[in-house]
Length: 228
Image (cartoon, rainbow, N blue to C red; front, side):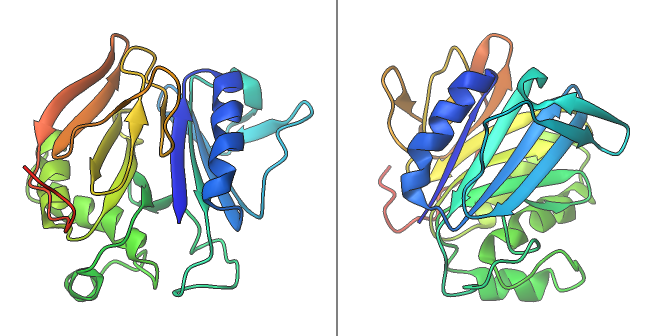
């Protein structure tokens, strides 16, 4: 079991992280965004947000952790695919300019892995196939939302996920089967329900905007728990 969460406010993000630790404390992954630049943390166990931490942001400069514009996170429980911690099997996963953190299980992972065998970023964790799958569709179409929706339609199983494009700086949310709640005004979201949060609708791709979460596309859910 895993948890995904995010906020544009550092203190709210830390609070969401502390709540989502109950979804898994085997490892933590965080992506911190400043315009189109980002910094990435992956660590075994839990992460200590205390102190005046600074992160290197894409090798260009250091920046205090509490001064980024957007914070995206993932907490992971150990899975049958990987019981020993490694950096490459920890969320978020990436391929080219796509970063994805996922909560759920993809039942068609063997088929996806075979289809995406040319992408070295795909490993033994099913979630690693998602950014590569989006990349494969973007090779045909340059329309970002269209690429994502086609990829999500191909996924079978359950997922709640966030997607980040370092090319455009856009952050997307979607779910099928797995839980995912959000404050549609502040853009805060979490796998666990929070006061003032509402469930995201299945089959809808949401984009974080300055006005709040906005529906920008649709996809066909292929979850065993989905009911139209």
